[in-house]
Amino acid sequence: MNCGQCIRNGYNFCYKGSDFSHWSLNSHNADPSCCEDDTCAKASDSDYSCSSTFTDQVYALTMCPQRQKTCGKIQEISFDEAGQSIDVTVKGLDIGETCTYVVKAKCGSPGFSLLTEDGINSGAVSITFMEYSSGAIPEVDASTMNTEVHVRQTEAPRHGWPPRNMKFGYSGK
Image (cartoon, rainbow, N blue to C red; front, side):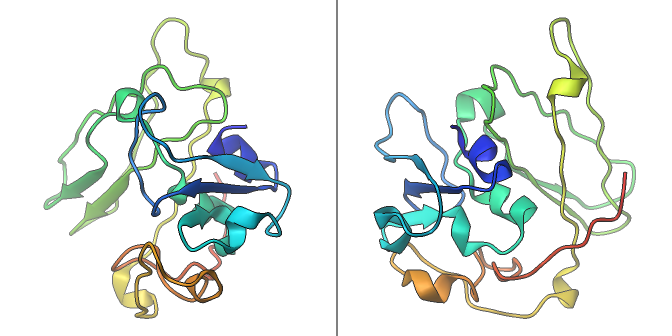
């Protein structure tokens, strides 16, 4: 199973590398696997990133590696003023594969919509998001590639991000 499909089905996705890796499935030796739970050998190896270090399932999806060929090279988007926009193109996404984008807004709240082309069924696409204000999350250290696995849950996967053990609420559609 691809990362997104593995996590959404309640399993533990692991790969060799740090969270937010970008790779080509043809050239990267990430040794990805979908484990039944957090008892597989990779889950206790500090060279691997695993979704089981996240408490929230949607937050865990952010750790999925993504192919630049599919998801594009732009992954971090910043809006400095209201009314700005950008188009992001996703092509050739396999079942269970994910694309993750960090969108920051200095004012207002970013919105998004799915523009479909021929052959795309919007029912086959799932868009999830997390929203938080940096001033509302606890300041914690960000883990690195070799951070001990048992410590990662209380650390952030990236500087300025919430700790992995943070739960996010569902606010409806």
